[in-house]
Amino acid sequence: MARNIVILSPHFPPHYHRFWQQVKQAGGHALGIGDERPDSLPSETRAALTEYYHVPDMHDYDALVRACGYFTHGYGRIDRFDSLNEYWLATEARIRDDFNIAGVRTADIDFIRRKSQMKERFHAAGIPVARGRMIRTREDARAVIAETGYPVIAKPDVGVGALNTYRIDSEADLASFFSRKPPVDYLMEEFIAGTIHSFDGLAGTDGDPIFLTAHVFSQGIMETVNEARHIYYYSMREIPPALESAGRSCLAAFGVRERFFHIEFFLTASGDYVALEVNMRPPGGFTTDMFNYGADIDIYRAWAELIVHQRGGLAYERKYHCCYASRKRSQSYAYSHNDILSRYGHLMLQVESVPGVFSSALGDVGYIFRSNSLDQVLEVVRFIHHTPS
Image (cartoon, rainbow, N blue to C red; front, top):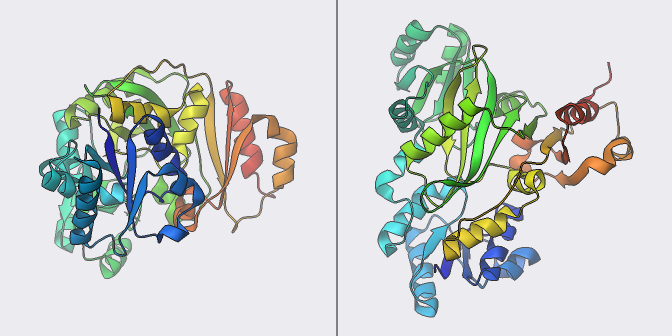
């Protein structure tokens, strides 16, 4: 039994208190470390935690070590250390090294953190990937473009979401990119035209998925952020065999154990799945809630039972297509919020005001709804996103 679970930054994202609440209900200690003052923690987070240790600067590694020492003294050996947040992957791995905690260690972190090294694992799994490589100079970039042609995509080798990711269509775009390029390592790849499909779920102790689903996205996060678009994505009831095969090959190649996964592919016009990237965390936004709605399960409880008791059984059926559709305050829409609820309220599950840090990707307001009919789901999306002609 893994009794002592230390959670880094338990107040963020705000709805993740559902994970920590289930740790307590499973019989574990949910021990939080964060930079939010204790008296400012959301009430749901406070209630979900066994104890909380305040660290004013989360990048002060010595302070994190002292916090872990405090919990070790009070509760015994730390069994798990996690945040379920991509930003802290390297910090989590370093703490696991220093306290000999099970999970991803520093020696393996680059394969799930650096996009260039992800490509190596995709190759090893026999999964097609976009042509490209690391660049440092304009000459490096022009050499890639000579092979692939325009357009190309330039993205930080280590990055979260689509932050500082650019599509480059011309020599003028290339000059503009280098004039504002942040001082970090960049990967340049050919542009792949296709629909983004994700392979998502929770892997058990042996790497076999406890839960599986897949999603289709209206466009990539890069376009959503850079062009200030609204977005929608929905879960599939049936996972295409080729997508599941590629996804399972990735799980084996990356050695996923006791972790969530979110693996992105392009489905091209030729019907091929081309790997985009792998994330060893829950999918972003409110997708874990969508897991629950799509199959009538409690993924938060399933995760806690896995982590605390190493229990992996979860009976489920993907009964519904569950969809997230956003709206942007900068756009005008033909139908009001009340119009949406009046016509489709019987399908609605959540209406979320999106925190500002996520709004560029997830919109300012998000509607979550479900139906066993994909046609009906897309009808609702069209209604939500309809703009005056």
